[in-house]
Image 1 (cartoon, rainbow, N blue to C red):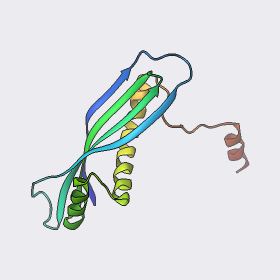
Image 2 (cartoon, rainbow, N blue to C red):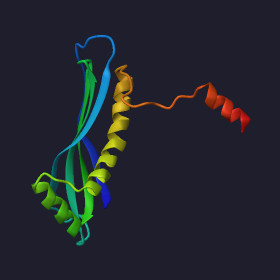
Image 3 (cartoon, one colour):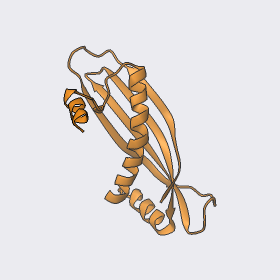
Image 4 (cartoon, one colour):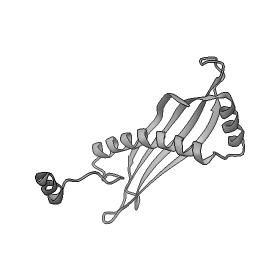
Length: 142
């Protein structure tokens, strides 16, 4: 399996009229569609497929929302592509394939979401590394 392409088709940040106070941040990844690409751009043993996805970060209660949509284009061997497309007709994805796809999406979309959060002065939806007094003392000892 090779990644041939990854692009965002929608990048949206929306500040809502939320209440001040304690907030909760939830993120979600979902596959909208999986389809085949009917072009002979690869070797005969490989088949390109496209995967449309959504990556959503919500700040509750109704403070903000980050909505990312995009497409991944993958090269799979012909049998694997047939299996994936056959499973998708039943709206199913094997656990192994789902893990691979979600990791690709999370790697790219999380970075974009962190950029947007920084620009909009929103708290990060995931913990960032922090250096504290203990970390500095450990380095001095080494």
